[in-house]
Length: 95
Image 1: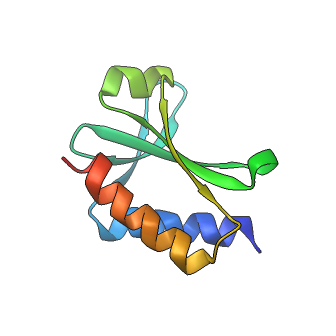
Image 2: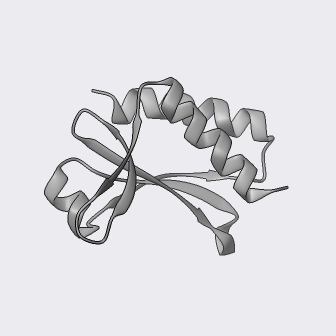
């Protein structure tokens, strides 16, 4: 299991849904942005899971103040995890 390739597949899902890759603030934090939703994909090694961290405004995004979303564990098939993640991105981050 190559974590970087799975992370790239997750990023591709965001891009297919209309998110843009953007750098913000002095620290140049990298986000996937849709309207006023700033998302970041993080892998948590100890949990063997991905989490989508998000901010709902530019100020929080520039300051790195993010809320954690659901965890997407790698103990299920990659395709099943990506399918669930896609459904959640539409439901939670695209309103």
